Length: 111
Length: 112
Image (cartoon, rainbow over all chains, first blue to last red; front, side, top):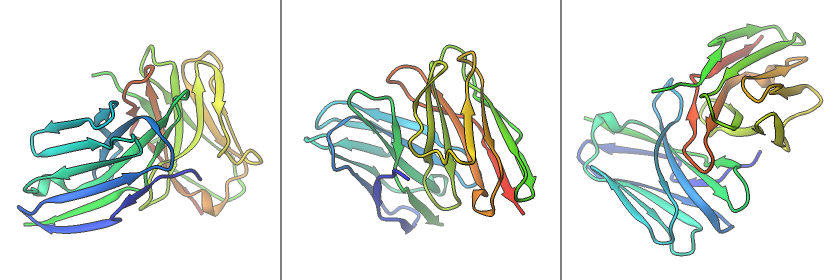
């Protein structure tokens, strides 16, 4: 199936450490969205990035969209146990509403 | 907040049997997606509807899977016959034009 690569696949951190996940596309994107899925749950929308070089912050979360609109990153500062889950990027290309999800990065936070 | 409704939440079926999943999107959302998510992997797009029309079903195994959204509102995904490898979470999502996607709770299918 169609999926987008995210790295790393897994990350285990001590509470208080930072965390970053990266999402890469081979094509220029219309926009990119980020979702969080808790264990046993469904994906929940976090944010959408549309503009080249855009940076958005939500409390301890920082989202970036690359200048070429081909890659994106999510950075969490000072992780907490509530950050546990799998983080997915979802890519949307121009002229389509097709939303293709990344492979995800599973974050585990140890207290 | 409005939600996407899916049923059933869980389904156990024997292989070679038929199974169907139902999704009721948020009112007014023209775009509806069905995704399959295997444990530990990301959601894989199976089919995308715009109103009642299929926009993309390139990843739908059409020999056994079918999807419809007859009145452009709720949707049904069917598998016949089910195979062991179909065991997964089936997620439905809807979205307004260029907006965020809203997911239902999903249907967890186990084929035995």
